[in-house]
Image 1 (cartoon, rainbow, N blue to C red):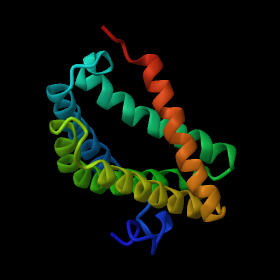
Image 2 (image 1 turned 60 degrees about the vertical axis):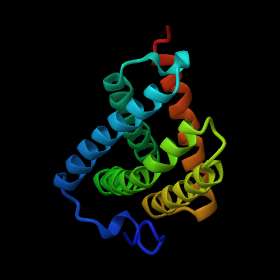
Image 3 (image 1 turned 30 degrees about the vertical axis):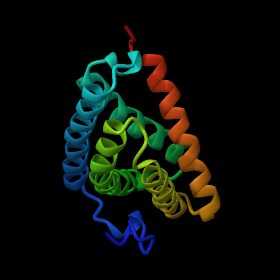
Length: 164
């Protein structure tokens, strides 16, 4: 919880794989739920992909992109803790997102937009703080990296997601 409040970083987490695997599974399950909400309330072709594929791709992309960044920065020893922090905070933020997402989609985008933007901004701040500690960079660079990785993951997912 302290990482969500920007008080601590990934270095304050245990370096094992147990919590990482728990948070990855929790994110996968929550991704399935959120994709089900989107698919049931929206009929755009982008949502035609299977929920399992989309949920799996989201997690795989996060892992691959973070591992690449940490290896390029010669910080491979920080991979487990960084991923645990990202998936742990991501899960908590996604829990907060679910009711806002449902409200926004069910109202045709007329409600909850401001909350969605605020939560997304907070998510970038949290991820920026994690990258700040993991890579020993400034908060501004950490947030910039979080935004860049978000868009990289989004465009890669679009390229691999079949549409009908």
